[in-house]
Length: 408
Image (tube, rainbow, N blue to C red):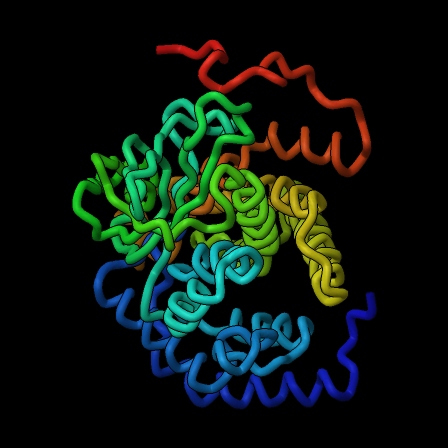
């Protein structure tokens, strides 16, 4: 891939930069406090206003059709806008799930009516989305989920629990997968739905994290009714739908779209210089290693972008970027705290509090090793689907889900 702009791309970059220079300062402000966690109502208001401004200017999704707010542009045009937008402190984290994971799924498998109803409002930021996959007994092995959906005429009745649902407390809609055929294999009896998060019977309980935030939630469903028209894809074929979402999720996370504190290697280098640590040989060695890995992460992202520019659906190679990106986040947080010392975790120990907050990348890193599939799952995917290694033995293969042994 040629990393230099063509003349056409350079002109497009100039157009993006000019628009951003004019409009981004209107909504720029504090970043989200944690991974996909808004700073409150004011943040949500700024985020929705910024998304609407991008939509009205045709920048929300450059590659989409004009009827959905796009320009029929190229993937590289979308990439260039994203690169330029990242230079500004604009509020984008709250839309990572909806735009990066669920919108591509609706476009791929949704009905015309679903696309008409949801995509434009999603793209314009009028409606915020969450993803409801994991359960207390189905984390790394999502297909073992037990939450049920039972057909009742023109509706489905949902019962069960989801957990680790990012942003559920402020979401309008969600994509959810449920067990609809217990006598089928675990991957075969799942159906995906689009669910209104304000429906009667839904209870949302935020989970307090060690970084002080509450981005994740438990979500309980008690006889929640969903119209049949909200089935996404075909009944009992929800695993295919889920894979589409998960592939896009790993690309979004692996390419740096997973929210978080938004610190990068250049911030750590600036920190080392300001703290007088840049001349320390040990620190310089770690900075060089972090910079190298950050560049590799960028190239992994470029590989995915190249595939997208050729019209390919995100594949298992996205797991490489996701796995590597989590490691980079951990390394970044560890090095930053090694430089700041106690001032990075205790604001009152530094006169101006400038170093306080550097603990956030490290405290958010464990979630990056789990969200979108744990490191172990990513290694299995890479081994089996990228390297062609033999798959792990599956004791539940060919067995109906209801007959698979599980803990109470």
